Amino acid sequence: MITDLVAKIGPIEVTSTCGGRHARHSQHYSGRAIDFRPLETTPRKAAAAARSLEAVGGVGTYSNGLVHADVGAREASWHGHKRGTRYAKAYQRRHYTRLARNNR
Image (cartoon, rainbow, N blue to C red):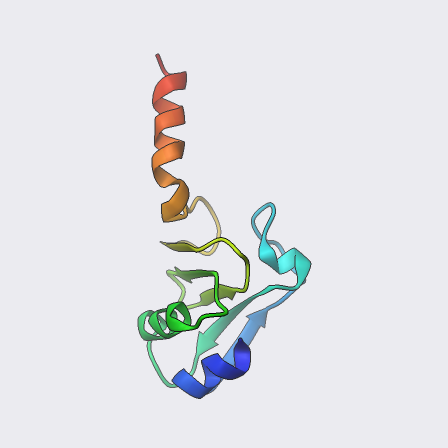
């Protein structure tokens, strides 16, 4: 995945692989995800290029310019903050439905 991504967007700076703090059940913990900073393009264009790759399952962008890409089986996409709450589009509707049910 990384080789294909670099071929599309140019050099990247990998900022996180398996170590560090990530979301619970993150693909990072199984060695199937990276966070990176694109060096010759914008994070938005890098995320679009990553989504176009067949091997990529999840792609996310963070407000600090980092991009997440993983090879998980589930397709997910998000934009959020480096730390704090972020919702994958695939789960957003279910989360809000659950909140509405619990607040009755």
